[in-house]
Image (cartoon, rainbow, N blue to C red):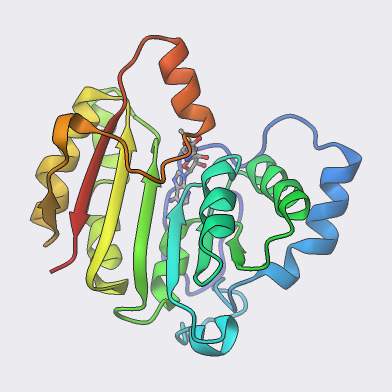
Length: 234
Ligand SMILES: C[S@@+](CC[C@H](N)C(=O)[O-])C[C@H]1O[C@@H](n2cnc3c(N)ncnc32)[C@H](O)[C@@H]1O
């Protein structure tokens, strides 16, 4: 549940980011209207699944391993991963509707059929993902919340990491990319505290299959250095 509406029975989950940006183009509205329903991973919202029944991922994705991207922004990383890994299915969660619309255009252009989209808060998705069902998870350039009093809004807090650990399969990899030094600090404190193990990279190197993202390009233009952190669920 994001700000603006609240389904009776649903927990109050404050979402501090943006849901709407500039006016959508007619083609984007058309994609949202015609493509989004078929891309649903199943009943996620509290309005359609008040009992919080777990999703039947095998039925939805034909038994393929399931990956998850939290906050996919414009969707470039999500589409890249789907295209280069046709044998997996990847679910993206993103409440920013302009980002969702951008992704839908990219899905059409790329012709990929192994992406599902939850156009909302990933915490609602966590509720209904079966335990141990996610083989890989990505958190790319999460909202930095630079002020100390806002650090508790960051994704790398136990409120998000505990359910993430629960839905990840034993041995599954969790990747975090960020350009914010203090976000690295909090990630290295909080993610192991939630039960993940750290995997070291030489020289903070990017993953071999890393395509970069819009936010990373902005960070590089503005002279900030990317950091790539990898964790594993024991
Ligand atoms: C700084 S942007 C980065 C976007 C993209 N990953 C990239 O690298 O270009 C962070 C994104 O995370 C999304 N986000 C924040 N909280 C979220 C949540 N609880 N569930 C899903 N997405 C979330 C925001 O809407 C925003 O689009």
